[in-house]
Image (cartoon, rainbow, N blue to C red; front, side):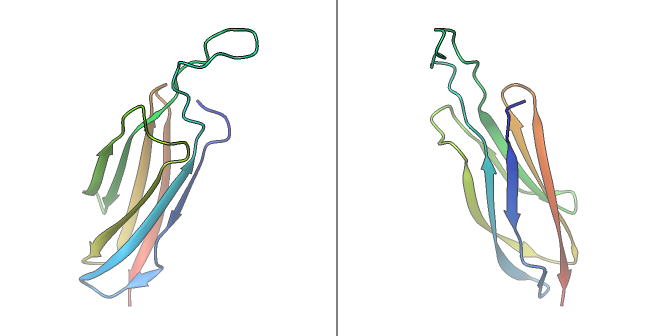
Length: 109
């Protein structure tokens, strides 16, 4: 598990049924390629977020596969249609097997 990894998610607190909302996500992650060396000359192990998913009430909204050239602290902004009140679940998968999660509820108003 990489040190200092922190997911941040911005979802409106409420929306109208059927409304398209904008969701913003950012995860603080160093994204080591496995090609750099530390001050002792040892290779720094690869640690890259390789997949990001978002689900709403258990149904897939977005599923992104990332490649090694992705930047540090990956940011995603996308739209989702909200059919009902519920919960968005966000998941980031790291090459080292770590999984980082966050969730946000949204109400229909």
